[in-house]
Image 1 (spheres, chains in turn purple, orange):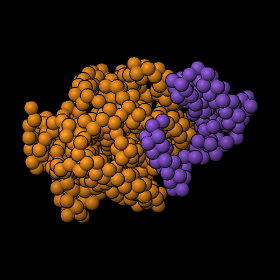
Image 2 (cartoon, rainbow over the protein chains, first blue to last red):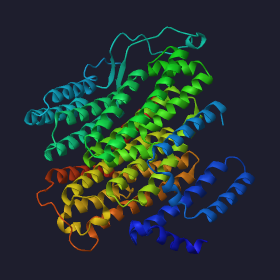
Image 3 (cartoon, rainbow over the protein chains, first blue to last red):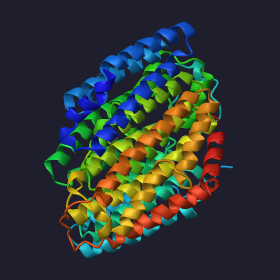
Image 4 (tube, chains in turn purple, orange):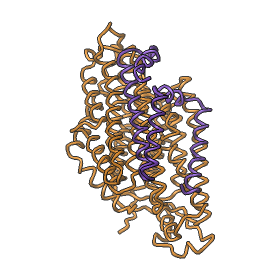
Amino acid sequence: MLEKVYEIFHEKMKDKGQGMGIGSALTSEFLMIAFLIIGTILALRTANSTILAFGAIIILAAILFTVPTVFKVEKENNDSINLSSFYVALTLALLFIIFLGGI
Amino acid sequence: MLNNSTLIPLMVVLPLIMAILVNFLHQKDKSVKFISIVSLIVFVIVPVVTLYGVHLFSGHLRTGSFPEISKMLIPEVYMGIVYSYGTLQKILMLVLTIITGFSVLTVINKKMISGVYVAMIFISLASTSAIMLADDIFNFFVFTEFLVVAQAALVIAVQETKSFKAAFKYMIFGTISGASILLGIALLLGSYGLLNITDLSNAIAAGGQLNSIGLSAVALLTLGWLYESGLFPFHIIKSNMYENAKPEISALLQVQSKFVLVAMAIILFRVFSGYALLKSVMLGFAIFTVVIGSVMALQQIELRKLLSYVAVSQAGLVAVGLGLGTSFGIAAGIFHAVNDVLSMAILFFVASFVYDKFKTTNLDQLREGLHIAPLVGFVMLLATLAISGVPPFNSYQSEWRLIQAATQAGLPELGILVILLSVATFVAIIKAFYMIFMRPGPEVEVNTEVRGTMTKAIIVILIIACLGIGLFPNVVYDPIYNFVLSLGV
């Protein structure tokens, strides 16, 4: 899977120019992977070692099967008012769950 | 101890009066130009000569502790707006008025002068000033609404379909956020009978643990904070605004957003000072915004869109510092806000020059710019280094402090993330720099009438400021740190 990442990038980045475009998309992919790993460690290490180990394995598996993630992120980050409204509603719900639930 | 300084409200009142005046003088371009330049000089001078202190608009009764409030269901409502002016406000006001001045001068230089347009810039200045000064949560809310309308008007003035759409979406989500903030304030007013932030803070601290009404207020105000700051999930709306405004106005909009982020975060910290979960939630949203902003910036092939996402991502980095919740972290976050707005302003002014000179900001259509504008290219390179946290520039000092603060707060992973994000920011902007100024290829169409003397002067001044703060960071950082310590959050 991973050895095909460059080809996938090349194919998807055809409309966005060559060379530097692909390079920056790869950088963003590595950034996403780093964020997911560091985010998992940051969120789960305060719980306990077992949860951290399981969480890390799940995240690594998820990364392996979802690369390249940046195009999915880009798809979700468009300026559609429907999508933005959905995320705003989700955020408000999340805030209430966190604060009122005391998670 | 408390000086009733009469000059403090002038920072809000003067821009509002001038906005009304230039609005009346619409189409009398020479008068608008003259009044604008004189006003800008006054706007910069007022924060310098104003004494630190508190201005009371009417008889405010007390700011002491409120042990009795916690025992009362509906206590007496203490009215009276208070503005407080300290070292932090002075630094932020100076940066804000100077960048506003640069934006207006660029507008004047491009002969885009219009009474209504300048009026909107002045209203946005007055609103941001009031948000930073207000010690009254309702007054704060009123000016956030003014700010949203003024910012939307500045984007609408571009008169393109995309800008209309961006402003419309900004207003739509502004209504949600405005309603959220107002409902949060209403819940607090209903519970404590107070609008003054200091009093509210004392009353909530005296009342002990927050009840479900107080917690609902926290959630609603946090949503408002996310919108005003342009953090996730409002990052797309905000970046759309930056992208579709004139670049010299985007330079101003990003300053306003980051300073409102800081001001509102401080208000939340003061009001809910004992509530640790708020800081964790802020940190979570901040990290998410930083990563998503950087990822999106890396994929852009349009300079203004790229810079818009970098601006959003950097706002997230400011919020990371604030979300750490320690005095060191909050001070580092505020320091990064000051540093970042200067570097980002340079990049937006460069985008303004590129747009005028080459008639496009599409990176695919630009090349060989270094022969045409070597100074602008050089300054853009320096600004790229500055915003990426490369020494000896200013952002190095703040990002280094952010990493230190994260480590001290027991989150060293966050330090790694900050370093990775600095690299990502560097890659994103250096890509744009290469494509505009260094990429070989056939010559591009150039508008020979555009000399951009004013823009060049502005970016040189700003990069010198970035270098100055980088070499002597304590001039700015120490007052900010002392201010944060005095807050006791």
